[in-house]
Length: 394
Image (spheres, rainbow, N blue to C red):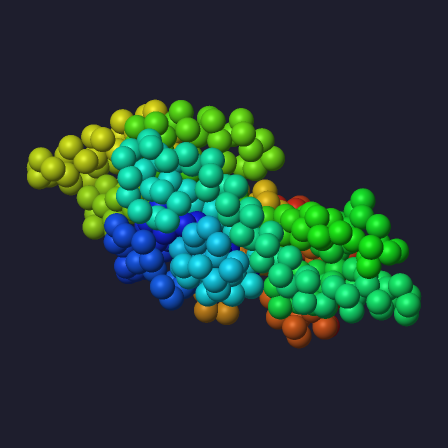
């Protein structure tokens, strides 16, 4: 699974990326500070099951803190986007090419209105953040349209003369973008699939837009919510774009909290609404910074950054978290307790889970056991969020 962080230059994409990954990346206050895409692991929150079994887990990947399991997800921070990207303007061609393998997109915008369409700093509140959502939609739609147009006449001929199925032809053309036949079918709802040669340019663009929505779901991170006008602009965005999930956030504050936690200054669980100061006699500037952050959390609840990623994985992509375990033993061969927590698509079965753990386990599957209830299930058992499952094999 790969989540792409997108948006115009200088809106805080790299800060958001670093806040999620704590990787060292270039963060500068000018357009196109990011040229090559940065890749790293962010983490989604899952309520850990270890306390239900009165044990302490030892994650093999990710980590667990105060009863919250943080499961890794790959993130990619791509080069900034400007209007006309689909025509190659700015870093457009590279930006779009980098996004091919993304399963979902997080669009980071400057909700304070202090960055213009080119990614240049302007007076606070002088730019309209609504424009950013509109132009990203347009760039992505025209990107998809460009791919469609390359072979559309061939698609239409095959469908009309050779009785080929349109959704299969389109899915094959878009296979490099991880688009499935099922997603194409959903996007084709309401279109005349018997006579595609008669589609107008307007119809083709409308279909490209539908296909983009189904195959690259989008969550909007309204960054810099701590700035003047941020909260007011957020409400305006939500009214203007009711079909999108728009979450206010401050990547800068989240990054400050995580770095302070890493240094042992505070104790902070990502996504929480508070933190605990661990060190006394802090320098005055650090005291003031923590006071400012506390005031922000009191007003907003959280920084919003963790919530953006969690919503993308669990609500947009509809994944669930499932633990492998044993009825008699929760530890692996190296003694690690509940070492793994896997993210699985909603609707996955016990057999799917067996193959996720290892191909040989899938091939030798006999039955699954719910570790909580000790109840056995067959291969078609549909997994639930936070299930703990033992797989029995031959």
